[in-house]
Image 1: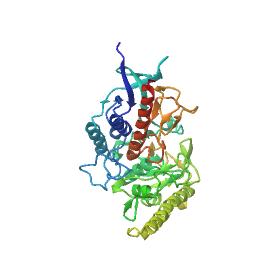
Image 2 (image 1 turned 90 degrees about the vertical axis):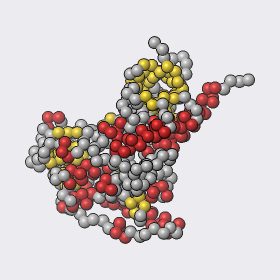
Image 3 (image 1 turned 30 degrees about the vertical axis):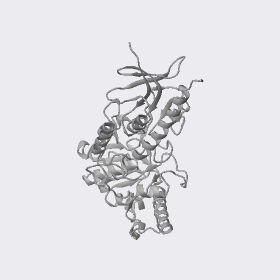
Image 4 (image 1 turned 30 degrees about the horizontal axis):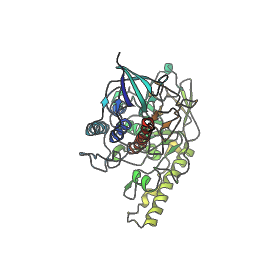
Length: 416
C-alpha cells in the first residue's frame, strides 16, 4: 500500500487548524489539514441553537477577513461563525480533507518523522500539529447516578428549552454556557436552579468599549500585569441577548434559584456548598477591579470616553442569596433535567508520542512539545489568555509556523 509523505500534518479544521494552514502556506511549507467531520464542526453540532460568539464581530475574527454581513459591534450567531471559517479556508485555499479521522500518531522507527494512521490510509509526516482545540471531550462529574430518574446532559448536548422534558431544570456551572442556558430556560418559563462556584466576572462593556477592548489596552490578553488566576475558575462573560454583563444577582431576581457549588448527591437530593455569598463577592471584586483599572487608564491617557457611574452599582441580593439553599430535592422540586455546564477535558489518546506529563496534559512551551516535531495549538493558556480565542490562536499559529520553518532549515543543512 502506498504511503503518502508530506512535511506537516495538521489535525483539526477549526479556528486553530485553519490559522495554522495559513501561516504554513505563507512559508511554503507543504502540509495537509485533516478533519474528522466538517470545517468548524463544533460550532454547528456541539452548541445550543441560540449561541453567539463571546466577542463582537470586529474582534472575534482573523486579521485578514472581516465579516461582510454582521455589524462590527454585534455578536455573530454560531452558524455565521462556522460559515466564516469556511469562507476563510476557501480564501487561503487551505488543503483541508474532511471526513478523515486521525486514529493514531506514532514516532517512526529509525528515521525522523511520524506515522499518521487515518481512516483513509497512512501518511508519513515530519511534523504533526494537534489543532483540536480546548473543547474535545465533555467533562461531567460523577455525582448523580444514571438511575436517579432525571435526564442528564452536557451543555454541548443542549439545544433549546422545547427539546427538554417538562419540569424544572438544574444547570450546574457558572461560566458563559451555564448562565446563558439558565437565562434562556427561565425566559421560556422553566423553573431553574443554577449552581455556581468560583468565577471571574468582568463587565461586558464599560464606558462605551467592549470588554475585549479593555483586555487589549490594559494588557490583560497578554497577562503581563495581571495576578495569577486560579485554575478551573469559570469565565462568566457572554454575548447573549446582544451582550450584557453576567450578573448572578440579576438572574436570581428574575426567578432563577442561584446556588453555591454542587458538592454531591444522596437519595435524590443534591448537596450544595455554603459558598454562594463568597463566590459572588469574589466575582464582584474582579468586576470592580476592571472598572477601577479602566478609569485609571482613561485619566492617565487623557481619553475622552463617557463616564458610566451606574456600572458601579451592584444589584440587590435576591432571596436565594440572603437565604441560600443548601439542598435540592430533585423529586420534590420537580427537577426533570440536569445540564452539566462543566467544561471539557483533553483527549489526545490518538497521539502516541512522548509529549505529555504524567497526568496526561500536554508537555510544551508555547505549543512546542517535548517530542521534537509535535506541536499543540488552540489550547487554553498556550502562551497567554488569548490562546484559545479566535484572534489569539492566529498569532500562536504564526509562532509555531516560524518554529517549523527554522527546524526545516536545520534538517535541510548539508555541510559544503
